[in-house]
Length: 59
Image: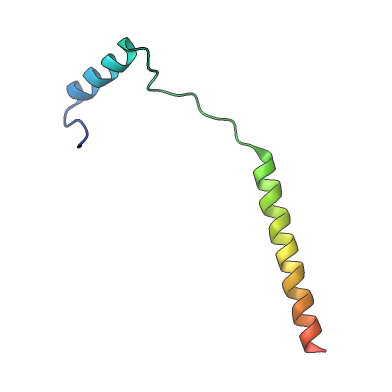
């Protein structure tokens, strides 16, 4: 299935969606700060692990 080729076709599709009660323009979700914290701590733990492994093999 291909998308609409003209603006009129796209406007007709949007009008049909609005008539059917479908909101084609969903509100933007707020970013979740916990994801950044989780990724950050994961990276910190991995770096500490690599550094400790490097120093244990170097000695």
